[in-house]
Structure formats: structure tokens, C-alpha cells
Image 1 (cartoon, rainbow, N blue to C red):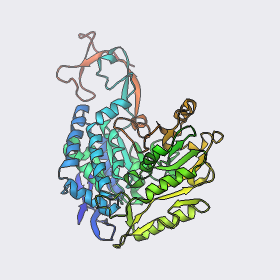
Image 2 (cartoon, one colour):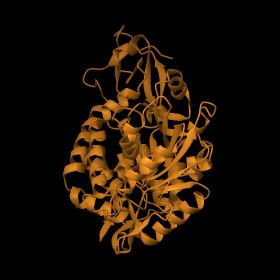
Image 3 (spheres, rainbow, N blue to C red):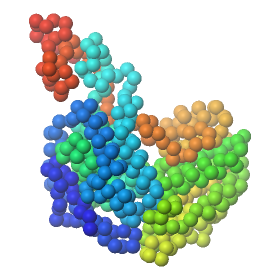
Image 4 (cartoon, rainbow, N blue to C red):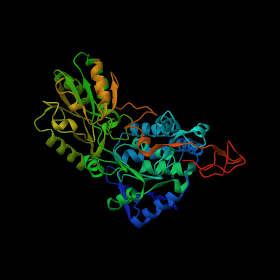
Length: 484
């Protein structure tokens, strides 16, 4: 049994209230300590008082943490033991967990590139920059403490909050109780690499205490479904991360047959559990041949335990898998099933079941199912025409547009509710470090302010913390002038 303690400003904390984490067969794997409300309040107050590390120290700490996270024992687990644990508890294929491990490490190694890309081109990173002597836009934090209600559908979601730590925020992570192993390992590696106990915390809580973390932080990010997005939509301090509803659009002048592999990869890559996996396929013309082709490819994917190296589909306890199946059947009523119409549950005989892919054809691009995102590979194929326009394509995290229509591409890129547009033969899960996922997080956490400062740091304190003693650059014998 692993013990996943709360990781607060005072070090690891094992609370009286704990929750047992079980694997797919129901066997206990770990105990997760749950922080009470008073502990959360005090922890965030302590984090607020803690100074931020200088930028160079933050970048170096990220590099050390990346190496440890991917290659060394952290919190008593080797990388292989950690990956096996995540796979047996969540049902995510072991190869997907391994890839996510490397991806998180690369994101940490390249974190400076990510935050630099987000900074406005005309802004400088510090008032100490020589350009600020005559007036410059300075890139500054809007607060001090950032809170995260993390998701548990995929380990790689924990790349999403690294930018906040790199920008100098102290970060409090509330892990998903479905998969607390990745944030526990990552937070431990970051603390040991130099961010310390007050720079980053793991505050696992129950639902009653969860909002306390957001209430006491300056800003927060919350993952969840449409209900979560609706709950926090009116709170300007909280950035909701809802369903991706990623899509593929194929226009009539393009040849779709060579793209079947890309479509299948978009639907099923990573087990089909991510917000970047395609769930809507819109076809200008008859969608039936496209639906038939992708159903044939998806049907060939094997049903295997998640720890099998060849596994590509998610696994859940039989009871939960059957609930998913029942929900799909209910929502798919009236559609044409190309795959999964007889059920998506394939039992493995150990109390768990593979969730197999499903492909359904819709009659209209405005069918409500087009916005339905499930926790396994599930695609809704619908007709589309120019009269339908952009409406069926809105509220999309990633849209792959297979088209040569420049005017249409202009409209898609300009549409505010489409976060990312890939034109041509590119799978929707494609991402690159340094590029925004759903905008840069820094757009939410930072601001520019004009600074004109005719002083330079006094000898011996160059690059020191804010508030370091300064001397005048233009008139060293006089007191520094006030600046506005």
C-alpha cells in the first residue's frame, strides 16, 4: 500500500481522513490523505508569504525535476513502478502512460520557451531590463498563488499548470482522486528540485473542501464537464477547462480515403480519453463511406489488459464500463450505428472490461450528439454543407480542416470559439511544446504595465529580488526621482 500524503508548506502531512485508491479489480493500492479546510487555509496563506524563486533558479529547478520525474525514483517509486500503478488503477494503456511521462518531462525541460513565447513581443521580463530606463512594458504577475483542480483522465493534463509555476506563482494542486499518482510524483520532484515546500503544494481534498482552495488563491484553473464550466463561468478568477469536442471537417474537393489513418488516430490516440481526441467528423457530401471506413479500422483494435504493451484501448471496472455503455445507447438512439451498436463492453474476466470504439452516423450537423464527448473512442459522423456554416464547428478545442478553401480557413481561424486549427492531414491530438493548448495560460495570469525607471540595481544586487537597493543611473549624487 502506497501512502500519498498531503504535501503542504510544512512538509508531508498524513491526515486522519484518508481514502483508499483501488485498481481495476478492486484491490487496494494506495491511501490518499485528504486535507481539512483549516489546513488548506493555512497552507495557502503560507504560500502567499513565500517569495518566488528568481527566473534562472526556476528554469534550473524545472530541468532537475524533469530528469527526476522521468528517470529516477521519486517518493519511493521508480518510473516503471509509477507507470504500472497508473495503468492498473486508471485502465489507461501502459504505453500511453509511458509516453505521457516523457511528454511531461519535455514540457518541464522546455518551460522557459513556453513562457517566453507567451510574453508580448514588446514587453520585457523585469524592470531591471535596460529598456525600462526610457519606458517599457513590463510583463508582471496578476497575483501570487494559483490553484488547480486537476483532471484524472490522462497523466499529460499536468503539463497544463507548469507555466504558472514557471511564471513565479506559488501553485496549489488538488489532484483527482481517480489518478493522484502523477501529480504526487510531479509535485514531489519539483519540491526536491528547488521549489521547496512553500513553492508548490499537493492539497488533496474531498468535494466539500475543494472550493476552499480556489477561494483562498488569487487565480485558479478547474477541469471538468459542462456542469463545471457552468459553475465557474461567472468567476473571472477561475479558468474552466471543459470538454474539448475536437472535430474533423472534410470538404468536398478533398480526397478523404488517404486520410482514414489520420482520422482513426485522431479518434483513438492515447486511448481516446483526451480532450484533443476527435469526437465529431463532418463531411461535405455523403458521410456514409467515411463512417464505414473508420469503423472498419477501429473494429480491428485489440481488447487487452492495460498493462499489455500492445494495449491501445481504455479499461474500466465492469460495472462502470456497463454504465458507459448504457449511457451511449441512450444518447445514440435514432442514429445509425456503424460500430458499437451491440455494445462497447468487452470483459477481460478479472472484473474489468475494455471499452471498445463506437461510430455512429447522424442525419444533421446540428444533432446534439455532435457535442457529446465520452471517456473512450467514440465518433459521431455527420453531413455538412456551406449553408450550415460555422455553427456546427463552434466550441471546439482542435479542428482539423481538410480543405483547400482559403476563405473557409480564414473564417475558421477567426472564429473565437475554435481554439486551434490544423489545416490538412494532421491528427487532432498533435501538440508541440511552446505552442498554446487552449491559449497560453500566461494570457490569464499575467499583464503588462508601463515602467519608466532611471535607476539600476546597486553594486552587488544586480538581478536580486524586487525591492533591492538602487542608485540613480542619470544623477548618482541625488536622491532617485519618483516615478509614475
